[in-house]
Image (cartoon, one colour):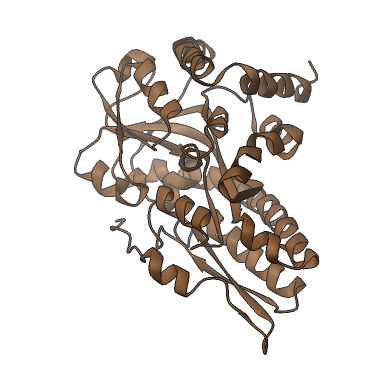
Length: 333
C-alpha cells in the first residue's frame, strides 16, 4: 500500500544542492521523480546516473530521489525552477501551470499509437512544446513516458455515460479535468502518492494511468474494473534547472542532455516489454479487463471534442494544429 510521501523541505534541498569543490572538481545533481523504485522510470533514472557519472569521469555525481520523496509533482517542478532541485522527470500535467502549451500532449485521443507519439515528441514539434519552460528557468531536454493511459474504476467503463456521477482522480492539469467533465464525471485532484489510499477508501471511484503505473503503484489491488482505452499518451518531461545547466562546462552540459535522451529510449524499450506481463498479473488479481471496441472508442472520441474546443479557446489553435500536422506526417498522410 502506498504511503504518504516524506517531503524534504526546500531549504534543505538548497543546502544540499549544486556542490562544486575545487579540490574534488565535482558537481552533485539531484534528480527527483514520482514513481517507486520498482518502476521503469526509476530504472531509467539509474541508467541516466550511470551514463552521466561514467561519461564525466565522476566529475558529476547524481543522487536519485524516487517516490515523491522531495514533494508532490508541483513542488518538484517549483524546486527545479528555483534551483533547489537540479533535475526532475515528471508528467506533463505537473509542468502545465508553468508552461500551459505542454498540456497539448494531454489531449485525449491525440496519438494513434506509440510510434507516432515518439516521432512527434522527439522531433522539432517536441522541442517547440518545451521551449516556454526556458522562460521560467527550466530546460526541458527529453520526453520519457508511462505509455498510454487506461481507465480503472469500481464499476465497468464501456461508454462515456458510465462516468456520470463518478468522482475520478486527476492530476492538476485543466485539460485532463476538462476531459472527465466532458465524460460526465467529477474530476478530483489528489496527490499521486496518496492515490492508493484514496482508491482503497473510495474517496474517488476511479482513475486513469498507464499499465506500468497501475502495476508499480498496485492500483489493481483497489480497483475491480479496467478498460483498455489507450485514450491518452502520458509523456514525462525530463527537466533540468537552466541556470545550473548553463554554468556547467559545455562537455558536461552535453553529456547530461544526451544521457537523458538515451535513458528515455532505454525506458521505452523496457516499459513496452513489461505491459503484457502486468496485464496477466491484473487478471490473476481478479481485475475484469475490457477493451474498447472501435464503436465504443469512437463514442469516447466524440465525447472528447469539447475538450479540444476548450483548449483552442483558451490557448489558440496553433499548438494543436502543429501537433496534428506532425501526427499526420508521421502516419504518412
